[in-house]
Amino acid sequence: MYSKSLHRFATLTAIFAVFLIGVGASVTSTGSGDAVPDWPLSYGTLFPRMAGGVLYEHGHRLVAGTLGILITILMVWLLKSDQPKYMKVFGVIAFVSVLLQATLGGLRVLVVSNPKLQDVVVGVFPVSHIEPVRITIAITHATLAEIVLCMTFLISLFTSRLWKDFKLKEVNTGFKVARLYAIVFVFSFIQILLGALVRHTGAGSIIPDFPLSFGRIIPPFGALPYDPNAPFPMSYSELQFKVALHFAHRVWAFVVAGVGIYASIFVIKRRIEFMRNFAFLWIFLVVVQILLGAFVVWTKLSVPITILHVAVGATIFGLSLILTVLGWKGSKFSEVESQVKVGVSHG
Image 1 (cartoon, rainbow, N blue to C red):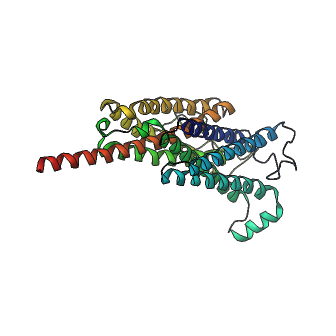
Image 2: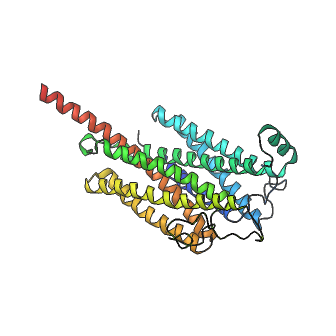
């Protein structure tokens, strides 16, 4: 059954999930991840002095807690409603995912600040330093945030009037659209992982120019500018790795954009009405995202621009999932329609 209030609340929760990802990017961009040494409290209280890095880190926790409350309400609402079983399952998955995400966020803090936990981690994992574990936890934490985002986007779609009023006569997608957007969704996820690696390894400004890389189309990996006396020196191999990671993020962005724009233009030209607006929005957002990526480099990792870049990337990812699901549903209806026509012709 369609419920306008449920759909609006689900949409609000999805928007808040994007907002949380942006706030999380502010923590990384300002280097505030270690500003608060304890968890779940902050300096032993729920309301520490909101200044400096504490403002970003504790603010992130407050927003995350608010999203957790919204998702809990959404899950309970779905479980008590007459919505299909699969929607209730998505609500539970979103709830469990946000709990795991919060736990990983706390572990990310404690693994840096708690010596006893550090000893346990170093003893369990084959590492000599805690940094690789910290990065792994941070990237997993960011990945779970995207899973939560996906669940909220799906619930918003499934509670919409568009989904309820899906009619066979309105559908003419075929399987090509579903396959194309499925590829876009997977490619977008890979891009998000690359972006998380770039942020958490500090490779965001390792290539100082754009669209070229050190003045070339492909970075000169054998002749990179290297200063062993820099304030924060790194080995040449580490420099090469970070440059390769940053460059891969750039190249893959154009791969995602190319496939996604092709799929969206295909939808627009085929006049697939129930997907057209989403396709136009996808093209618009990906153009904005590439421009934001350029400004991130040109402004030397400006915090507001970096936050927008991460938030728009998350929105593109969620929108790619919606287009994939709509394409899949349309292809299923097209399959049914073709089978009906074959049956009629044989009859």
